[in-house]
Image 1 (cartoon, rainbow, N blue to C red):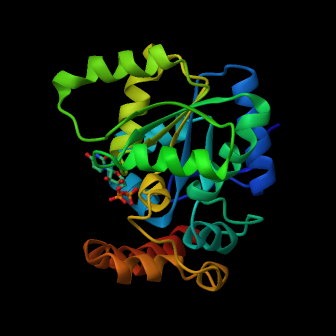
Image 2: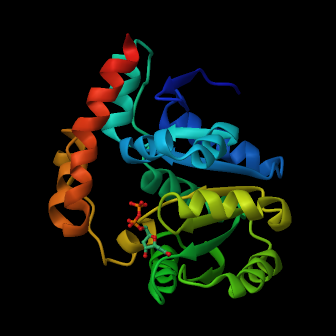
Length: 242
Ligand code: UDP
């Protein structure tokens, strides 16, 4: 399957539906492709405009999906079709939901100590039969890295979900993907925090009204400052069109 890619401020984002994204990730797992998948929201794209290393990683990833209303808006504003938002959290849930019947092995890497374990318990409740073959928190020093790589390799996951925040998760996965040999790795940001009940997702009506960014900005004071990125993003995308 190949998808049209839309250049948004220098980041090439795939134009695809959630169903297509799920099918593509399943194919990568079947093929043991050894690929990286990123979920790009406006904040990540803005960061990539200033961080050439991140931008290069995104543009050499197998797939960058449109996470966030801002990304979908930008693509459409630039005159390209973008069927819908493919949120990292939702993509991860869809893959976990199919994992038992497809016999997939999944590793949870990232978040504060205990959170990935809590998310694992939640996944086991929500998706009976799921194999979460390992967990590791996301706070470590460079001296621990070899150990972490070893732990992931020994667990032999088909899917590695990494929640270290942007751009740490993308950079870490890119640096270690060859050594890890995991079929598919995805940076999933706050997914374990939400699964563990530490962080809430916006109510469905707000997600549908494309206001999830506002909810997150208001709920997490440390994100409030990040809300300022959004008008800047809109401004830059408008200028990019000309
Ligand atoms: N996180 C981590 N290690 C770090 C920094 C952050 O594991 O060194 C985790 C953090 O606990 C959270 C996740 O990364 O669970 C995503 O963080 P945040 O929501 O701040 O990042 P975003 O994805 O929005 O950039």
